[in-house]
Length: 111
Image 1 (tube, rainbow, N blue to C red):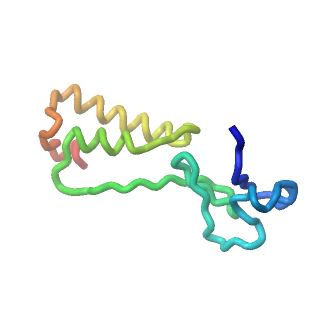
Image 2: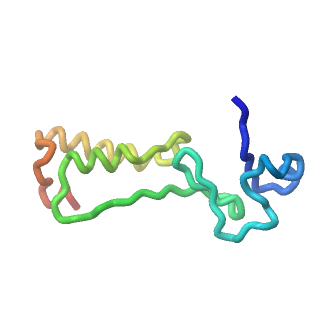
């Protein structure tokens, strides 16, 4: 497998890589430029990672919707480990309460 579209936040490294294989040009991009790979968003200019997910918050939520939201969070590097653990503990609590898949959650759990 041949890797392509390299990216770095260090100009010296990008100078070694041919322009056609670069995904991001250190000198020409705007400050809000972000690169996304494997569900992780990286800002090379400021060197930080971020995640984006869409939550459709409405009054009645079900166990099926909770599982769907948790399953959408893809975290290959483990950055969201503490958040995913908390979400899985919530799902485990739903199993303990023996809720059906499409039964609305009680108010304290839904919040």
